[in-house]
Image (cartoon, rainbow, N blue to C red; front, side, top):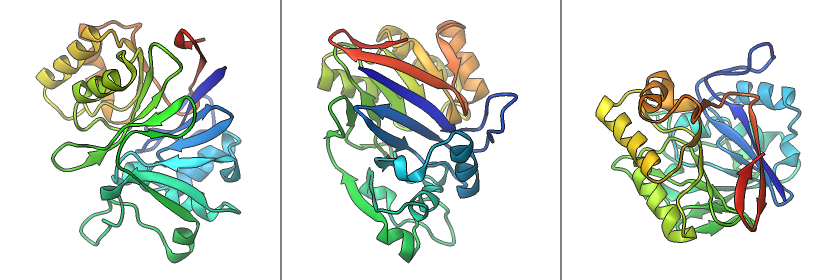
Length: 259
């Protein structure tokens, strides 16, 4: 069975296209005949623009998942809901909801109209979205609670990260405990742009030691983080994943293998 992950919103976009690169994160995951939007970016107008140019109809989305309440992941949700004919299931940690204030832009904030289109589902443990797609329990990292997405088809899962505020070690251990193997691939952000070299090198060592070296990184990984990962891993293993990039997988008894 085939599955795919498409980058919809990120700081970078494919050259020579009409896609807009802007601060934020959104991936479209297609598996088991369903479409899951993982993150909605920061700015509704940019999400709208990219979805239109990628020919993604809001009504085609099966569900949305907000990994945590930062605006760069939740800001476009109102647009997505407002453009739909029917309501939409929205999965997020309980802590991600209702934190917007005049002092903070974070938290999922909806108008009365868009709130009526939202079927709120709090993530409080391992959650099976479909046969091959799962959400981890939220992991608390001191100031934010974050959930992760896992695409599993057998032996080696694929891990999708919004920001990985808790550090990659906790997440990979959680995945192994659930599925019996460390992730083979990682897609998304690793929160390395504004951290010390030691943290970046430790992240690289964890990925090397767990044999998770098929990396497609964006958002808060940042150029500095990517360079430091490549110092420990390799140029081929650490890849950029920007708006318009798409990865395809075949899921089966031997796990998820990139095509």
